[in-house]
Image (cartoon, rainbow, N blue to C red; front, top):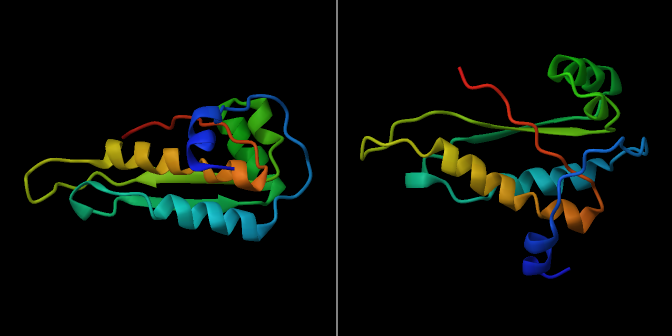
Length: 121
């Protein structure tokens, strides 16, 4: 798949997920691509946590009140840290957006994806 095809055809999937395990190699590739996204002032605010433990994913799905989430065989949590740059600005929201766009890589791996916005403290 071409890059722009992936960007323009990417959609969030909100149905129940196929229980087939996601190969760890695919999760690793998506994580590496996500962490390679640009970051404002090179602050490197993005972290990624992968989960493929069904019990843990079910717990997280219950906390989010998202039954479809609980059916997912794997989950990537993309987190950004609010850091003040040398210019006195923060770019963590832009960094998050860039990281999310990189999840276009999921189309190469045939993994369905849906974004659930977290809560900012």
